[in-house]
Amino acid sequence: MFETVKYLIGSTGASGFGSKSTGEDVTAAAPDLRSITAIITGATSGIGAETARVLAMRGARLVLPARSLKAAEETRARITGEFPGAEIIVLPLDLSSLSSVGCFVFRFLALNLPLNLLINNAGKFSYEHAVSEDGVEVTFATNYLGHFLLTKLLLNKMAETARETGIEGRIVNVSSSIHGWFFGDCLGYLDQMTRKKAAYDATRAYALSKLANVLHTKELTQRLEQMDANVTANCVHPGIVRTRLTRDREGLVTDLAFFLASKLLKTIPQAAATTCYVATHPRLEGVSGKYFADCNEVSPSSSASSPHEAARLPDRTWFGLEPPLSSDKPADEM
Image (cartoon, rainbow, N blue to C red; front, side, top):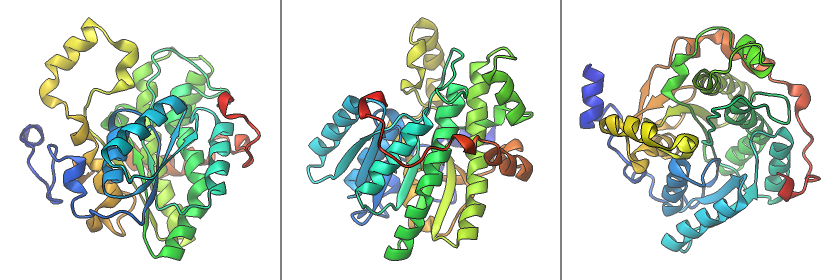
């Protein structure tokens, strides 16, 4: 109850920020990001678009991967209209396709740009059962597996950039408090769900994918330490906000539910704050493997704290499907 009251009034935590802080508020301590190159997935709308806008305002060079190049170009036009000097590169990427992830990384590396910041923000909530081209349930494939492979293929570039520039690299995985709704055998349930051996539960599938994001962060932190890379990895819960994630369920019931919950909802600028804080704030230098909400470190669910699950999940995510880095696939097929 006390935590709910703090949330509603926007009480600040140890960081000096809280639920009412915005992306612009939390980046004021890092106003000049002109030396930073950032990749932000899911930046064509909602939280991702606001994150991109704020980082561009602070001077960062942005790479925006998108399944819809038209939507990405519109995002670029909006940002450059507000900040004419912003440098924004658009590249095709469908996170539900491992081959598309490989093609994106090939194209990005061919640009010979540094990479300081990777924000794995894109999210999907599939209301109906669907399987990706790689044979994986599509919510899990998009929210976790695509980001897992994207990060894996870019890790050496981030470590190299940090070593050459002396600037700490940061990876931010956007999860959700809903990750705590999943209990049980992650891989067993994923297999049953993918093969339709169990009734499809859209919310549980989403919760599983978000739990995997947190587990990935834990495992990734250990990997970075083994590499002796000057790169951190942290996970965030942006808060409750109405975005395009609910676009398949627009209507009276959805509208009524969001109206009744309106006091708990964040604005888009507020929802982008935790991502922006973890990505840029000087206070978090050297901080890795943590989970943040309302711009403050909090504890994830007990399932997300399991070292057994954290080590087990990446080991079993179909490394055999990992594509070579090539650009053979035309952009219009991605």
